[in-house]
Length: 446
Image (tube, rainbow, N blue to C red; front, side, top):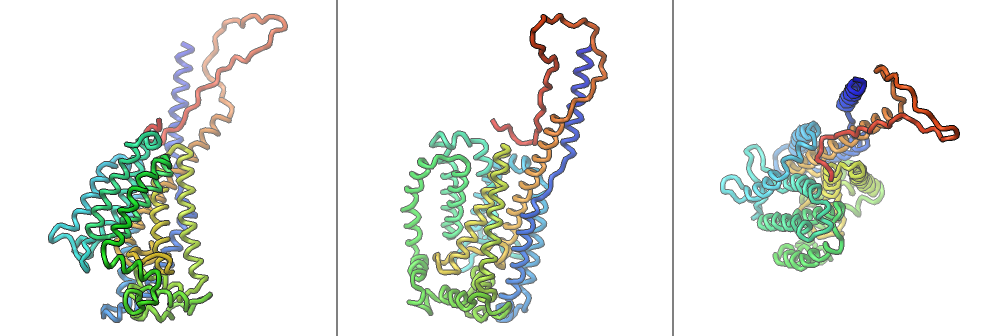
């Protein structure tokens, strides 16, 4: 009878403890929120400054592109809110459907009547009110699938060739579909994210060198196969040689950067945005920023993106340390996607890299890029929320374990104590109760 009462008391205590853990909520990382808001605010200011002249030339209104930017920001905020309210275990459950969705999206651009071609490139689908660039969604969806794959096969990725080559093969298939559009910049970004996540997910570095070396000649061949790509590479090396031809865009971007000097010419006072610099409000908005805000503004932008990527990597590391691998790998993927894209965009504007059609996340004007960047950042904020919640749950458990156990209301038996030999050491008779670890709802991390 005494044993029955003791077991019932233990079960009741465990139930109360589980209830307390379920009542614990996390919070979104305040540093991450602050950095994202700062970048988005800077983007609104620069879109307003860089697009007024373009809107007047196109006779669509001075604030046409700014209004569109606000609309897409609002839609992106809605997508981010939906992801921030969704448990990561629910997202992880549909990983295979997400991979299938990547392939379907990349094929939709070739469907007559649905796909939209601009200057010979099939990268958009027509949604009626606007065109949507599918690769922006594919990048986020692919990160979620790869994070789930690394969770399921993280031990095999480091030990076997097959487990390591499978995600590389999937990336090659997606890259092949992207090159049919064609979209060389996004293809290289997808390969870079794949390689980075495999390294952080425990991939064997020496084994990874073989497929990298094998794919390198193919990448070089694709880069120089098309005449326009070859012209971009040669003009990047010396844009002043053909300033009014192949080097026109880059030479004007460099003039804008040089004109800004240290403190810039002042917000709204850029000359290059007055129909001299093509794509001043999208791909080359960083050059306009450098002209108007100078070296100080450039350092501000670089510092904000460095802080964003660094904070995301730190959150991912903390998740992995707590054995929340799916959340950690998602954070790693979002960090590398935003970090690589911003690095390429800034490098192109500064003449350090050949021209690529990649926007500066949350700063450049654009619909698909803005919405999907908000979606990716919403996923990152959800990771930070669940990390904080897990840390609070562990702290509660440790506090309960450290506090003294309450006196048991169950009456003890009246058996006499065992005799103790004179001089024998006295041993404690209390048993340590087994520690109850929290269950965070994820898959078992065997």
